[in-house]
Figure 1 (tube, rainbow, N blue to C red):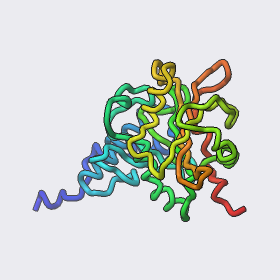
Figure 2 (figure 1 turned 180 degrees about the vertical axis):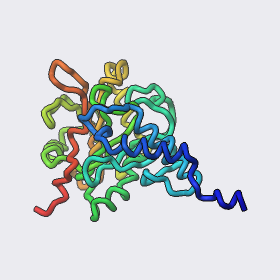
Figure 3 (figure 1 turned 30 degrees about the horizontal axis):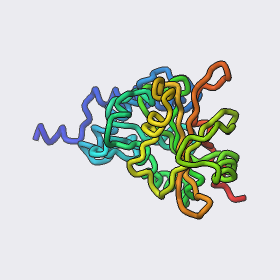
Length: 264
């Protein structure tokens, strides 16, 4: 009876930890351009709360999803009504982490694209692929030292500029074009899914300079309907350059107010 009395009661340390992390998450620490009071807060939320809750109850609060086998979690960002974060459940610092270039899976970008069902639930409607974008910021453009992929609406001007030039992009990196005030190289990928095509590896293998200093790079993947009507993606890369006031934040290509989903 004593053991049964304790069933369902959260250990005191866990209650305290929840309180501390709730305060941390309530502060604007997970989105650019805010600077985090605790750059490890996102890791603690996923590692100390979401994963244990998924293992013990099957309800990964405060995350929306935890895929133990896949090694990732999906968490609502505090900014905007739709923005989600895909966070690996293993410790990965960010785009510069060499583990991201090891052979084989996982492909966290495909995991992020797969999370669009959760995104559409928050949006309350189906979302055209060209209105959805994913982004990872550089070391200088992020506030958290745990890899996370932003999922949110694309800025309408960015979407339209890419669509207008879609025929000029191919399977190799293009010359830079200006988007949201910064210089992005663009690669076009065909297919409804990314599959095993990992943007981290595509950048590192196609650009020696980027591979030598991945921490300066920022990446975005934006859904597309290609000129021939087939589904595809635009892969965008930019390199931080503080002389040009460019901190390497592809998240700037996203719109956390989701204006593209509003009725015209």
